[in-house]
Length: 544
Image (cartoon, rainbow, N blue to C red):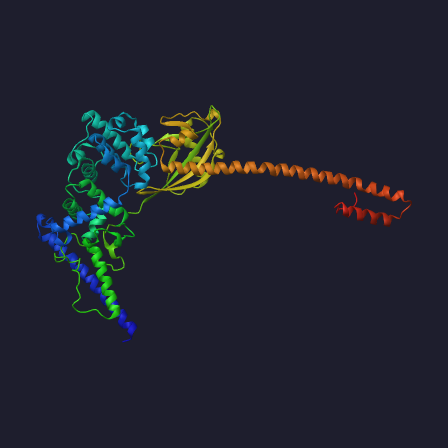
C-alpha cells in the first residue's frame, strides 16, 4: 500500500473513531437522563468544573482585584458608585448605567450617561420627565424599550415606593421593570454592597474558559453552574469591585476573538489555557522526537470525571485549531429576518422660509416604539420603482388629503440598517410639496425643520436616511451651481463667434480696397492675397 493510501485510510479511521466516540457520549447522556431522577440530572457538577479548594479561591480573588486596582478604566458610573454618599442616588446612577450597557459598548454609553445624569440626576427628576423627552435623549443608543422601562421604573419608585429604590437584590429584581437577574445582582453588589456574583456575557466567557465548560452556554444546566461559580468566587469585602473586575477582564483580556492569555492575572487557574499549552508542548516534543510515554496528559474534558454524562462538557470533540476558542460553545444564531421598507422624505417650505420635513410616530409597542420616522411602508415581494412611487403617492394622498402625481417623486437610494434580529433595507424616495399640499390629515404626524429633526427622538436608521437624502440634495445644488458658469461661458463663446463672423463678413471688401489702392490687379493675385490674410485671421471657410 502506498504512503498516500495509508494516510487516507488513517484519516478515515480517525474520523470514524471520533464519530463513534461522539455517539457513545450522546448515548450515555441519554441513558443518564432516562434512567436518572430529576435530582440526578441537577446534581453538583464534577470538581473539574468548580473551585473545590478554598485556598485557590482566595488566591484568585486577590490576583484579580490587584490587577483591577491597577488596570481599571475610569468610567463615570464607577466614579459615582465610589464617591456618592446618598444611597438612593448611587443606586439610581448604577441602575441607569447597567440598563444603558445592555448590548451596548462602553465607549458608546459614556456620553449618553453623562448627558442623562446631568439632565435627570435623581430618580424623581426622571419620573417627572415626559416619555418623549426620554426617547429623545435615548435616540441613537438602540434597544429603545430600555429607556421606556427606565422611565416606567422611576415613576413606580416615586408613586409606589415613596421615592426609595429597593435595597436588596431580590427587591430590585421584583420591583423594577426591565431588571433581570444579572442587572439586579450588578446593582446590588456595586451600589449596595450585596455579596452576590453577577453573570453577564463577559463573565460567561471567563468562567467557561477558567473551568473548561464546553456545553451550550445558554442551557439551564450551564447557566446555573455559572451562577454557582460566580457566587463562590465573589469577594465578600469587595463584591462590586470583584464583579466589575470579572467584566473588565472579559472585555479587555479574555476577549471573544483574540484573548491576551499572556496578560491574564488569573492564567494559572485556567483549564483552557492549560490544555492549549499542554497540546503545544506535546506537539513540539513530537516534532523534536523527544516525547516520552510517561508525559503528563490533562484529563480528557469530554469525559471529565463523570464518564461521559457531565452536563457541562461539550458534545463536540476538542478542536485543536480553535484552541481556547473551544470555550464557550454557543448555539448557532438564527439568520436575521430580511425586510425592505419603502420610505419617503417629504419636504415643504416652512412659514419662515426654512425647509420642513414630515415625520410620523411609530406605535407605542414593538420595534422602535414611540419613535419618529419618515412615512414608511413595509415592502412585500418584488416592487419595481414605478410601483413604489404609486404606493407612496397613495399613502401620502391619504395622509395629506391632497392630490399628488407620481412624477413628483424622486428615487434617492437605499440604506441598510442592521437590528439584532432584522436586516433592514430602506428604499428611499423624496417628494417636494407645494404650500397647499402640506396639511396633515392624520394624528401622530408633525413637520420639523432641520435643527428640530436632528434633535428629535428618531432612530439611527432615520438619521442614515436623512444623511443620504441630504447628500443627494447637496449634489443637486452643486450641479445647479456648476451649470451657471457653464452657461455664462457658453454665452461668452457665442458672443466671440458672432464677433469673429462679423470680422469675416467685412474682410473681403477691405481686401478688395487694399488691392485697388495699388492699382489694377489680377483676380488670381487678389484671391491669393485674400487667402493669405484670411488664414492670419483664423478664417477657414473662404470669403463670404
